[in-house]
Amino acid sequence: MNATSPAATATTATTAATRRSRLRSRAARLGMLVSLFALPLGVGGIALAGAANAAEPKTVHTSDGRSVDALGGKHSDGFGADGSYDPHAHVVWWAAGERFTESHHDGCNPYTFIYGGVETDPRCPVGQVTSDWNVDFTKDALQQAGFRTYDLSSSDLTTFWGLGLVTNYYHHVDHPQDDYVPLGGDVVLFTDASGEQGAVGVVLEAKSASKVKVTVGDVSGKLVTKWIDPATATVRGFHVTSYVTPDYQG
Image 1 (cartoon, rainbow, N blue to C red):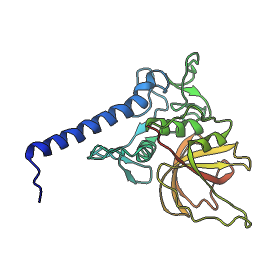
Image 2 (cartoon, one colour):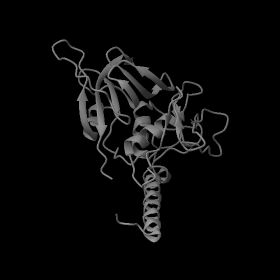
Image 3 (tube, rainbow, N blue to C red):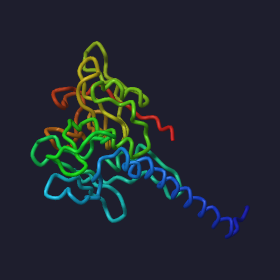
């Protein structure tokens, strides 16, 4: 049997720790640090000055860093002790930990990106704008994990099909439904027949094809987490039409 020297073991541990640190730093650059230019101020657990006495997002995590969804489920951040990184798990971790409800049902929210030339709405807290934020919440979850989101459009939800593997969900007898059990980190789409209009959300976990936990933004001004049966569930009057498993390109 080949023995491993203490020095070699230490080197391996140091390498894994270094890789983990670099991945965390990279995720931060792709997510929170680029918020200086793209993300709305105040997202996550940081409340900025000037945003008091208004609707602010909150995050819920355990002492060991797992996020806790609104139904009590706990989710790891996707970073392994061996230096590995699961971006789909990170999407779940970020989305699950968020809590937000509009204070006056006025559309003010922290998830809509603020690009150059777009002013903060004076009716909203600093760093927030008035907008339908359903799509923006899911885009934020994807971007925080390092997925590319610049092609995703709230006016055409078929743009989400370009993220990766699309699994259609059929509601017609002439199209037998596959018993697809979605994965944590999948995007779930509730749309019209064209696939363009509707709503999107994040799959947190699934017990079966008919029992899926999702988090959906801007459901009557709230961030909602619930178990659904995709055969019957609707959001904004639209049924589930597809799931998309995003491809991570690093």
